[in-house]
Amino acid sequence: MSDPLARRLVVIGLGLIGGSLAKAAKQRGLVSQVIGMNRNANSLEYALKANVIDQAFQSVEEAIAGCTDEDVILLGVPVLSMGPVLQKIHDHLKVDATITDVGSAKSIVVEQAQNIWSQMPSNLIPAHPIAGSEKFGVQAADASLFEDHRVILTPTGSQSDRHLQRVRDLWTGVGAEVDEMSAEHHDKILAATSHLPHILAFTLVDQLASMEEQTEVLRYAAGGFRDFSRIAGSDPVMWRDILIANRESIISRIDEFETHLEKLKAALGDSSPEQIQEIFERAQKTRNGFLHKSDENL
Amino acid sequence: MSDPLARRLVVIGLGLIGGSLAKAAKQRGLVSQVIGMNRNANSLEYALKANVIDQAFQSVEEAIAGCTDEDVILLGVPVLSMGPVLQKIHDHLKVDATITDVGSAKSIVVEQAQNIWSQMPSNLIPAHPIAGSEKFGVQAADASLFEDHRVILTPTGSQSDRHLQRVRDLWTGVGAEVDEMSAEHHDKILAATSHLPHILAFTLVDQLASMEEQTEVLRYAAGGFRDFSRIAGSDPVMWRDILIANRESIISRIDEFETHLEKLKAALGDSSPEQIQEIFERAQKTRNGFLHKSDENL
Image 1 (cartoon, rainbow over the protein chains, first blue to last red):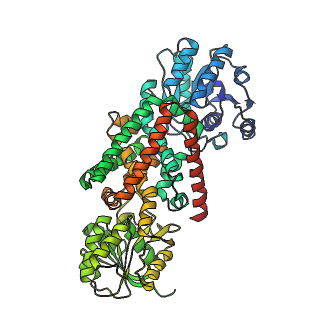
Image 2 (image 1 turned 45 degrees about the vertical axis):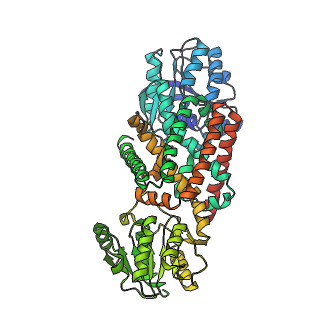
Image 3 (image 1 turned 120 degrees about the vertical axis):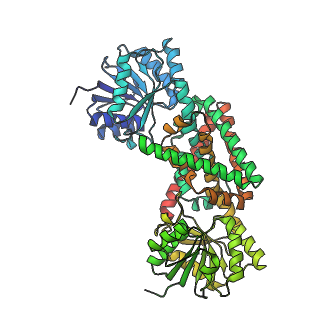
């Protein structure tokens, strides 16, 4: 086996994504040691027992205390907690370790880092693995979670090649395909492909829950609803943060969705079968094209 | 094996549902013979070769010509084609065979039958199996499709026990659980649990398809989107008909959804994290309750 990519992987906010990366990196020999930090002692205890991590800490300061230039610090906390954690890293990290994150909104991470360091630090590589599950917590960690999934890096141009390459190698090392784009572009695309679908699922399930016939509604919910609402089982705090962090892009996408829905409702009100069928056929075609593409690419 | 429930099952509009029922009924010995009617000769040819049916016809008149009191005629055509088919059955059926359907909207079937026969005929049992798939056509027929699924019957009170029991037995015979309710109530519940989710999925996919960044959007669509949009692959004509047939209930549910979405958008605009989190937590709780329930019941 070749040399490990990093001496040590420090996961701040050990949850599904951080835990899965820790497991995968250990199994594949990409790092020599994994350190986990979580405020929840039970999660840490589980992770130690399950051999997801080698050492556990409940504070950022302790977790990064022994870091060298050869280490990777990965932030897996909810998006609105990234700022406070970056601040602690800024205050306490005295070496040139690589810093990266897995937040689902990227502009906010870049902005907060720029505020904290006055400019984007050369060792911070914002990243977002397009992988996940409605499950959460380190207990759901899965070493194969990133295989054949994409990871988007959003460097700003200030990062050094050494750090950029290390983060690239870490993700390709666990089976992912790595792309790069600007944080703004990432946030616009993900608002459409991920954030909006989650909002629609949460909203639909909340609507059904508020119906008088709730029990019956759930009784007769079919498989389509089951798939559709799977993502409404996702972590509410994580998603609350994503919404607020990517608010502008998301509001634009909601507005756009409302316009499309109004158009369909109008066609239905007018009993315009051709128009309804046209919308459905276009959606079906796109959907099938997507399936075809993802078979090819993933 | 006990006597078959019916001598002959005649499936008018042989597609996924009719084909699956035909397969299941034959496998389980519930009927002695299956006749398929479809306007598409290729579907019939496939169904004969695959042994889904024993005899094929391209017209309703021919398909029902040899019927006796011991037969079941099942309508599997799109909802807005039910009326014309019922008219042909009215004009040509001279025996007391059981007539039933599998339409996803029920009031329209009842209304059309009442118009055609002047009153609800005692041998017509409107029904809706809550089972399906984004696949369609008899090629996708699956004998296990109804196992552990619910079937809702919406008799009006004018039906004779003999016919009602036969349709009940047919569905329980293929592994389904049978419930009864009014057509109006069915349409209200299904508008929420099935029709609205389909509309949201079609609308979302249509929206993404119309974005400038379409290719990229599909490239970065994650698993959540894949599940969510699965139902957007459903048959456009079938769904067009369902929407128009159940227009009023559906428009009410869309209005309600829009109100909920506006509430979330307002909370987001105000950056009100507590309110967003509350909505998400309620949805998550409902969703998990649903999973629990469906494990128990299905």
